[in-house]
Length: 112
Image 1: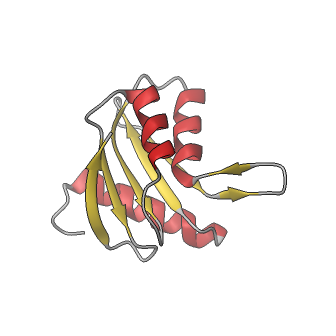
Image 2: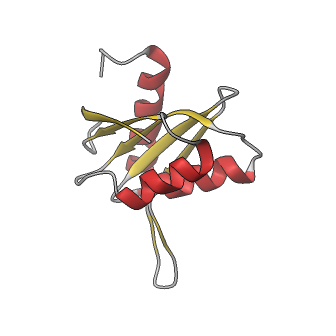
Image 3: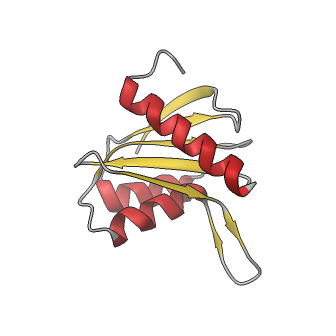
């Protein structure tokens, strides 16, 4: 995590805390073009399933954000292609996405 830019390190901390607080499978955080951050955790209800990144994107859109600079997804698996598609729909291509373990160790960096 220390090799990340400081602002991206903050996203890791936010995603980790959100996941831990909710006990969810995934935690995510996103920084918009104005520097505002949004955090999300997996929603897994009988009638609604949303990934952690999906929640963070929805919060940004609902807040009027016009794009994203970077995102972090902490998960046991991989960042889903559907999540990357949603991020592209919202913010276009080239957005940095750090993928890491639930404990916050960043293992991979992707782009939308």
